[in-house]
Length: 306
Image 1 (spheres, rainbow, N blue to C red):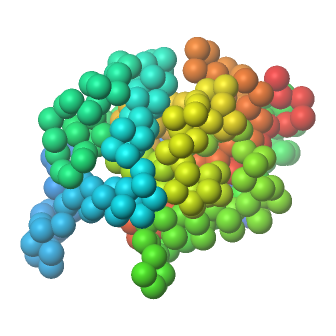
Image 2 (spheres, rainbow, N blue to C red):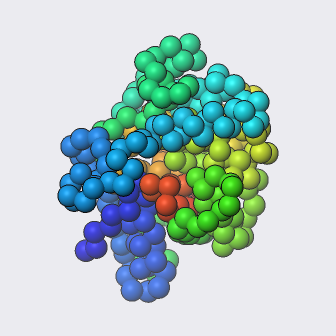
């Protein structure tokens, strides 16, 4: 047993460790489990006794609210386009029996909620909750030995983890994702256009737009336009956060990355029920942890997967 702590990317890093164990031949079967029950909201430094250098002057919601303001000024995006991320993801969460927020909201309801920071209302920030998720990683030999159904098997094409670097004047949030995602495309031998479903880190609405552009799924500054055109809906060009994302499904920290893999697996198997994206065969799971680490996995179904 190995315990993994990597902030929001903990579950993704645990899944990566399980994949590496099986790929290296150390294990034939690995179980990645994420479980968490956050007791309070606040920086981890409170529990270590080490004082925080920023003295709590930079809260995550303020950091991303400032990024949202910068994005709107740079690209002419509107507050309505950014809030539309939450509308889409809540509509997906309403169909997910495991979601924390199982209710659809209109754009007016999202924009009309209590203001948290900048343009962000309460419904544009992910909730804190508890949860658990698990996934099994097995070798091809195990599939045969245990006579497992290969039509339901989902292959891990890529597993990439990168740490934050210096990106000059560019936003490290987006640039770290750009670097990690494109290394994953190279490892998997695919292009962004080959993706059918994506589960990405949307703790705040602006993140989805920035990361879609960083992943090459939208031109710079155009993710909001694509969103309102339905390109990222179920049935659109690529379905994004069919689980409801962190905004709708919740973000209990430890399980989140593992749950993303489970959602993509259900989509590829054609077992996602009312939130199924037709023709899903290739998916990408993306998580960042405290902005300092990014983990990307690319999954693909077998040629015989329904």
